[in-house]
Amino acid sequence: MAISNIRYGEGVTKEIGMDLQNLDARRVCLMTDKNLSQLPPVNAVLNSLAKYGINFQMYDNVRVEPTDQSFLDAIKFAKKGEFDAYVAVGGGSVIDTCKAANLYASSPTSDFLDYVNAPIGKGKPVTVSLKPLIAVPTTSGTGSETTGVAIFDFKELKVKTGIASRAIKPTLGIIDPLHTLSMPERIVANSGFDVLCHALESYTALPYTMRSPCPSNPISRPAYQGSNPISDVWALHALRIVAKYLKRAVRNPEDREARANMHLASAFAGIGFGNAGVHLCHGMSYPISGLVKTYKPKDYNVDHSLVPHGLSVVLTSPAVFAFTAQIHPERHLEAAEILGADIRTARIKDAGFILADTLRKFLFDLNVDDGLAAIGYSKADIPALVKGTLPQERVTKLSPRPQTEEDLSALFEASMKLY
Image (tube, rainbow, N blue to C red):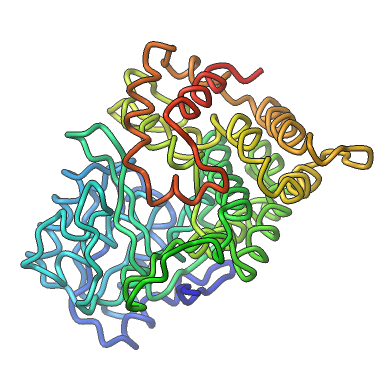
């Protein structure tokens, strides 16, 4: 199991200057995005850096839903700055960009594709030492502050991929629930769906005992290992919090208890999936994001079309879990019960349908777009969506049930309309 150090509590951001002093950091890179640079979370970090006299440079050009080019721009900034520590303040996009910048600045002769996941990149193990990275999440979604994963859009292939290595996980995640109070409603919902799917996918992933062959050297062990007894604990706990608090957090920005709990659930699910992995919802989400046409979501202040990551993941979840439930139906039924289904008279063979219906009701209650058709896709796009899913073997091979191209086509078709 690999996990970052975590510090949790209202106001803990003010300690970040001391943390950097303790690390003896002389040149710090502060990464964020243009929207956040004007908001309270970044101000809280800047105040702490000023109070403790920390010398830093700010990079606020992070792209929401990063691309290979936006990663390269941040890497160039990091190489030029010769930093000895990094601070990332933002959602998964910011934290992932900062991980990549730290990695390639620490390994300046490496080609970009050297560390990118195979089969798109070479998937080489990271053997260089990275600089300390402190992650300050401002959304309750990716759990990126706990994981060794950085995701981006590879524009040339119109597909999302990433870098996965324990070596790039943050040194410290500062989980300050005050930062969630500036999140608009749709961002709370979409980031919460990411937590939901992280928990569900890691709990239903192929068990670690069924993964093979064993790597010849521990350095080659994948970050994503399949469902396992430790990840299961975190996944189920995160799922219970989502069931109890997500709707409250979305509907009432003043509900500090709900928002604080979702912030923690994001980290809990991150510990779960950061070691177990995710499977089909995520594998299929990458082309849904990568092939976006004109969709612009409410509450996102961006100048480009995008499907928010959590939305791209959750839209296929009813179809996916109806498909995977043949394997470990009892886990699918348990998840449905946690999310509110009455399973007292349920038959085990109906587990997938019960979980799918429970998810549909959950999404309907939160005003989620009615399937892929509502965000601009049609049946004519299915071949391209399938083609974009095929390279995602790092996650699709963790599905408990193997899938053919025909299966993927059927899953995309079933996800065109939800209700």
